[in-house]
Length: 251
Length: 215
Image (tube, rainbow over all chains, first blue to last red; front, side):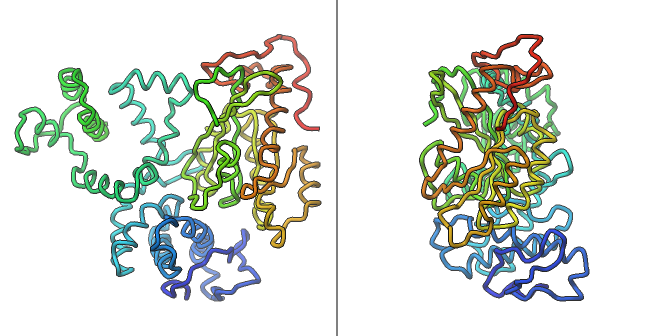
């Protein structure tokens, strides 16, 4: 492990060049000649620069991050995550998801494992190949959902050349952290993760009008469409939102 | 400020590209809203701003796509370049590497965008003169060789930001209002976005294509 991890300091400058060679100026003394020959180590260290740039820009209006040791804690968690997940690694936006865990959990190790579990739900969004990113499949689902749930809005967006829903990339990738305040985003996460977007539970709950939660067999798209025709006329917003979640799971 | 309801004669899509943390979002915030945000965050994917302005008596709406700097996000970039008529190629003049990477950004831009796209090279953070790592001559030479416009700016101190965008937009206007921007008949898409009045000359036999974008 690089000596910088857990030191209360973090790397923001470039320590490894594009060619994989360590920079001459190596203040943090990261060059460990044996380990550096290892490609994984080199790639890992290359990610430090990006993580550092983003850590310095994460929630910096919060007093918590005025302390460099706290920024370093966020950096540590992201750097370790990059090592553990060598398939996807660090991608901009993960810092936004990680930040609340670092603030709320005092122990760095706890923050790491909490983040590691939370990111499992969304890490596919961050995966990229030469021509696309994981989040794009979510965007096309969103587009299909909107076409059904609010065709007028969808049409309007298409008219503006926004039918690809690129504006929603950020919402989906950092789970609305940038759209809402820090605290409101956490409320939303709590609700989302408690619900687990289960359409079965929701539809059943809604249809018999009681507080009883009964898990039925998986619903088909057709059943949801029927439900939608029956219930969407009165247009209660929260119902639309929940229905949207239900659709997301069925697709 | 971008007025969504303003009737635009032209809509120009412009992309902002360059390495992470060079100040792309700050340049845009300065141009579109005259703001400099002290707690600005990393851009996720792509974010948008519009600004309407008068050029030659016509209402031009600039629709600016501000992109994430991290290499990973380039997977989505072909979509960013589609229909773009202008590009702001931004580096941080205090970070040599961000300038060295301009070649890569330019290559990618030329690979994906319309070949007559107007490109402006921008050396941002010129208020940090004492930390300068990229001499003006290097940037000028690069810009001349690659036929790009070039300007040093400071989003923080509002230096040259408006001029940079205006220069690019005026040049785009000059090309689009005179001739079709694209030579391959795809001009309608690349010159203007759907849903707006389009004043592109569709003269079929226009042999010359828009006067070459860069002087």
